[in-house]
Image 1 (cartoon, each protein chain N blue to C red):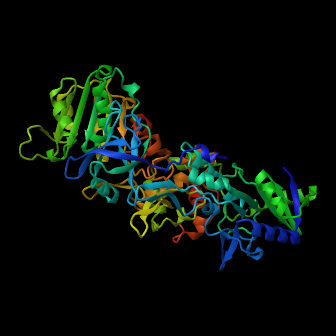
Image 2 (cartoon, rainbow over the protein chains, first blue to last red):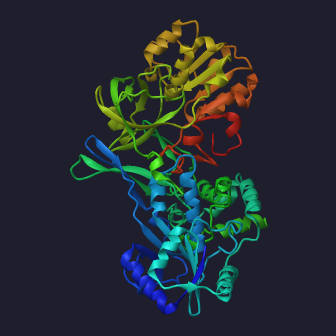
Image 3 (cartoon, chains in turn blue, orange):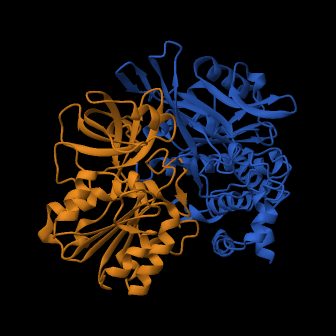
Length: 342
Length: 277
């Protein structure tokens, strides 16, 4: 596919037309943080963001998603994809979305996710500012982002716009682009490569070596209990993670007590009840009773359990869990490095 | 990426009619079900269903009848929470919703022409009954068939008609025990492993175990003493199988999802998986 260039001034016009005609979601400022939101005006878009509070997966796999609507004895599915342009996603979040694409299509295809995903045009933007706990320069670096439709990179006087798919190509109609020069293309490539050196956190070992050694740590109970010593079991690390996709399925009545909805809602394996079952007569069995066990499960999931399906680790190094964990114990990079250095 | 119209919505249930509902213990109710659209329901012994009532929710339940009985199928629901309590209040003629059959059940071919021992503890008799009745219906396909059934008290015994039949038939060596005795119980008293002492189980026997999590370890220890290989021991595991389609993560053990990779596992497949037993 082709590589184009658009000047700073024309870019504004391009955005403005796109926002007027389509549902465009992009990074916006919220106090001193950033969130993905529907864009109403051009000025709201903040491509200089470092990282958003929640990952953009919420646009495809929403926090709360209706699965079945019922009314007395009638019921129907709720697959209802909304066409959206997800604009300005960093490459690590695009890698995470690609992972979700894989798991929701693996074995039993989940059209509740896949239909939403199909309706998305995904535009990656280059990283202009590095988040304080970012590690995407080295985490799972063997895995390249895929599944995106376009990739824009900001140069001094405009943007290089690389198109990968027909959906990406369809965005061209909103702006006046020219073909990018060899120099502009090379500069964009350099910017995208060089920023990877600037992450404050890094992994020194290959994902394969990490998976193998972390896996061997499974039975070091004291290690895991020590790591999780300050864990509040709040599940924030799960909720802010771009690759976490666990959910609960619940039913809710409407006020008429006849109709209602069956929906899924994000769930978190760090919370105490996540794997608990009732046995009857008040008896219960929890398959991961301690904080250490639950903490270990998350690290195993991020570094090893899913690797054969995903082709790499289920962590993209965004640093959200590291920043947002109240006790600051969730950072997978620190834990992995501790194990690898042992 | 996905031609979404080509795939069924994996969360959309099917309607079933309750043909018979019978309270079998204080907590458990036995339902005989039929597809509301009159279609046949195909499954393999050991598979599960997500059983639901709109407005209440879904619960994973093992199918309790053999696929040899084609027109109807059974489930037993123990009253433990919101959904199971609502289901327990249903009666003949009422409607339920199911998704399934889900997961991997018993590969019946692996049991063909073999000696079979099934060990069921408590409510573990429900999912294993799918295999017990399959064997009884196709009895010539199997060699010696032994069944151990243990409950805490005699009052907790289920499928009393089946039990009466099994006690009398000479095509099944049926042994039962209770942990604690009430008045009138003349059988064995003790945990389920005490049943091993009077029965000859040969090392070439295929064994199915289903019961409370605590039971597995003790039973496997006995089977190892006999010399039964890990490949011949089948476990029917219980977990919080919330979605039943390998997505939601609640039933995950290492890289396995119990609702898709199981709930039936050979012991050799999971013995090195921490958190499995």
